[in-house]
Image (cartoon, rainbow, N blue to C red; front, side, top):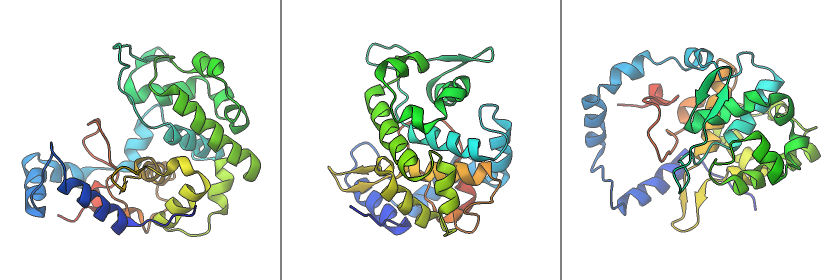
Length: 249
């Protein structure tokens, strides 16, 4: 089923959800502005440089090429749920003499096993045993991650010569929301949507756009990056999102 979503759909969807929230309430836009002011975020927003931050992170691809695009796709495909498991087991990953935790264990794993893992033909057929050999077996929802890898990998192999870079190259529009809708229709796993309360989040799809924009230093989506919302998350990890510089305060 084809879907079509834009910024307004996402905002209205989340407003509806917020109106029935039990543990969180922001009464008005002025309240939100006061939060920004109180937390001294305005100065951080003004100084934030997404391109530099991308380059400064040693786990991110430093050269924007086909490999980097395929790396970003797989990373963001799997960018969800980084809590320790129900028994308190962590899923730390050691790479280049450092130990990475939580979300950072994912890009560390991608780099550690890049020669095998950044290959859609491989992960379109990945088994549980292979997954456990590559990833820390304690990583949450691994069966779901395997399912998404197989689903997305098969689309890439069957339609895009095994590379998300081909998908991006074939995308003619420069609009971020056009890309997100095209992405969701080709790769249904990027439809972050709750059927229970009819709410769109689109966390991973927007992160993918942000990462492609940052890694390419604005080559992609530069005229529409400000149309994205700050992506939803369930855990505070970074003080500033890529898009904070475009918030109207």
